[in-house]
Amino acid sequence: MSTITSTATKHIADQIPQDLSSQGVHNISMGNLEYKNKRPVFESKLEERSHILKHMACAFRVFGRKGYSEGSAGHISVRDPMDPETFWINPLGRHFSLMRVSDLVHIDGKGNILPDGNQAVINRAGFKIHSHLHRARPDVNAACHAHSVHGKAWSSFGREVEMLNQDACTFYKKHTVYENFGGVVLEDEEGERLAKTLRDNKAIILQNHGILTVGETIDEAAYLFTLLERTCEVQLQVEMASKAGLEKKVIGDEEANFTYFNTSDPETLYTEFQPEYDLEKELTNGAFEK
Image (tube, rainbow, N blue to C red; front, side):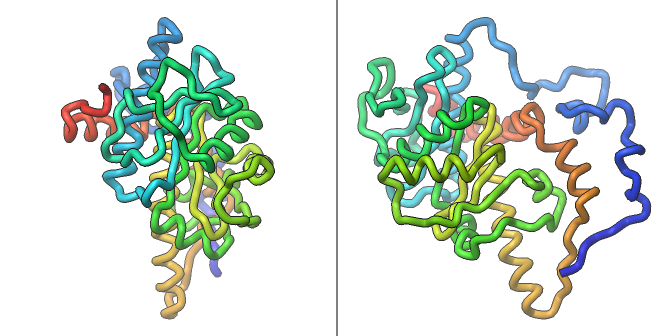
């Protein structure tokens, strides 16, 4: 395995322009206008909840369009801004591509279905995973897990992804592997171990299972999931090419860290999901918002 090195970037930290010395969407935008896709500020928690649930339903639609569904497997959860001890999750058996705001289920930390959401059963494994994630990580407001093809394939190696390209650097030293596959997650102990393994990372590769991502917003977590799925796909392709004799080049730590700093903060990752939201709204005439 080779590593990319560059004398031009040897002292890259000292060469960062002043306006790139802090994280935020200003690092990827330019011009004297306000960027329309910035993370919004809400006037009330009720307004924030409405926004979150629309974007949550959209995330399911995006996952469906990208082919991440697998029977009844897969779940997304979002912490409720009005009652942070509770969260919203998808009902069991509803296809991602059909999800609407009115389908989403509001649930407390004990598994009780609350009356202001859809009155439907949920995925037991989903509750065991997400309840422990939200409890262990107060900064995690959203978590996404699905049995996507390339995530499942790469997870069978029990390895982190390598920094093979710019996009992969979003996960630089911020993803890990959960090696203790014990079958479908039906017990609290498994959920607790998974949450402990996640630590302060953005993503976790569940060995022989799939991938899971988290974020401050549903937009961040959903975008990270689509990005990690694609990163797993590219990694698999590179592995096949390297077996055929092509030399693999891995980005060096300094360059990877620089890229991570400028592209992986919650505000920037929120903006990365907005083109998908706009597309899904156009394709469905906003059906998921109902």
